[in-house]
Amino acid sequence: MKKMSRVNLSTCLGATVLLAASANVSQAQGQPAPDHPSVTVHGQIYSPRSILARNMGTQEDQTTQFPPHKIIGNVYYVGTRTLSSFLIVTPQGNLLIDSTYERNVPAIQKSVEQLGFKFSDIKILIGNHAHGDHQEGDALVKQLTGAQVMVMAEDVTALQAIKPGGKEHPIDKILHDGEEVTLGGTTLVAHLTPGHTRGCTTWTMNAQEGGSTYNVMFGCSLRPPGVLTPAIVNEFNRSFKLVRALPCDVQLGDHGAQYNMQEKFAKVQNGGRNPFIEPASCKVEADIEEAMFHAILAEQQKGARH
Image (tube, rainbow, N blue to C red; front, side, top):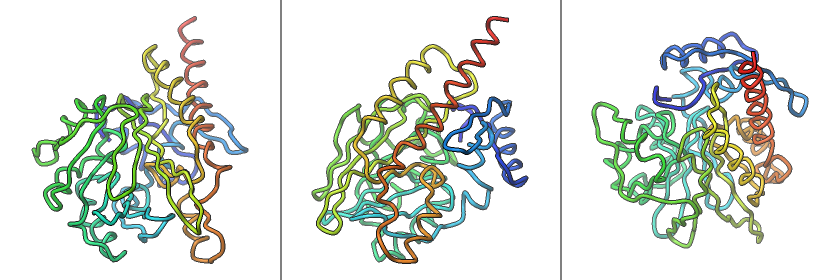
């Protein structure tokens, strides 16, 4: 998470340790962290701080390897407890979505290798959005694998400002809304869903399992900032509409909590049907964030009238 982000660093709905975690993130960015308004969605109460703490967890959560696992078809999870990183495996090499923090790259490499794949087989690196907790490690991944780094045009400026240890942020190809990235018979489509960042990208692809084809959606954060400008309001209105229209059987996200990763992973261990295939849950994150977006906007408009 970088100071340049257009995000309101807010959140925590429970544990004191999570409140402390969100407070640390907020302080690091030098921004206030108001914890209002609150919304109730699907029977759960959310506040700005609770959503951020849910996403980020503790410092340990952000850097501790989560057991790498197959999600569906050729899609695997190789991230930490709270910061997602996905490996898409193809006969012509592999794609990685999100390098997360640079310090997490060794954990991602370990996860890839524990799954039986070579880290050096990563040919393409794409990202979710231009914040350090998702794309700070791009330069190191490229250094270790030689992967081609592809980024959304609207996030180029923000990514260029992410320079861990002074490293220039690698950009090998600039993508645009609707563009396809294909490798080894697998095609991912980049959908521009701005608001959280200018180039926030929701990726979609098809995955095969058990003789059936499923729509996989790698959601980009829809978490609104504390101050909504007219431009950001327009971006979010477009993004919520687009995300709701995308076909989805398997919803993933840039933070595992956005799709109940740990709960679903536990179910995998028990066998039975694939718990990640859950079309009914595909719009839950959009429900939460859109409710918060409208609540923040209403509060802001009310304040402007006084």
